[in-house]
Length: 205
Image (tube, rainbow, N blue to C red; front, top):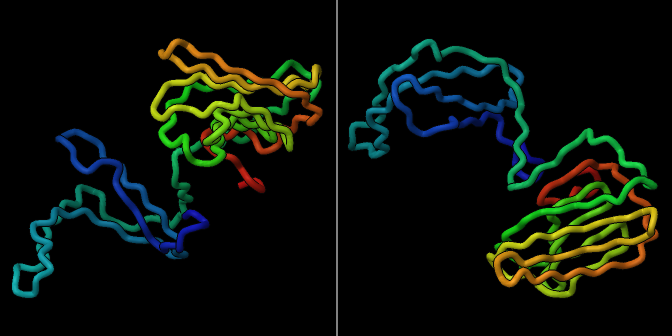
């Protein structure tokens, strides 16, 4: 389970809420118990909790499903982001490294938001300065905020050989307004931590 949420000893769900004959439904279960857990499949005829009602009525639909299964903890990471580990390191004196994305910002008024990150090199957007590139402690931005729910192509480039950090912001479909800025960059690129999409890893997390 997520480290920020209270642990639940046994939890599960199915990957679809309905199906037709011949369809497959997968059941996802995470168990932090040491002993195996048991499962069974039933059709619920009535789940009325009213003491004066019919109460709980179930019809067995085992179909070979019921039984005991070994407990296995399955981590859960909520949120729409991705972390890619095991990425080969990029030589600091190699070719320029570019991060590029086409985005449709829905909350551009918020603070600094990471679009793509590779180690200590990040492509971000921010409320007042628009697209920005960050390499370690160095930062450069286009200086114009993004419009909400508009398509943009944003890029950050780090040229370690030339010592240049640059960023660009192109609004698509609205006259193709193109903005770019660059700054000197003495920051040494470090690719530890892999690639993250729509998130920034902090302390390896």
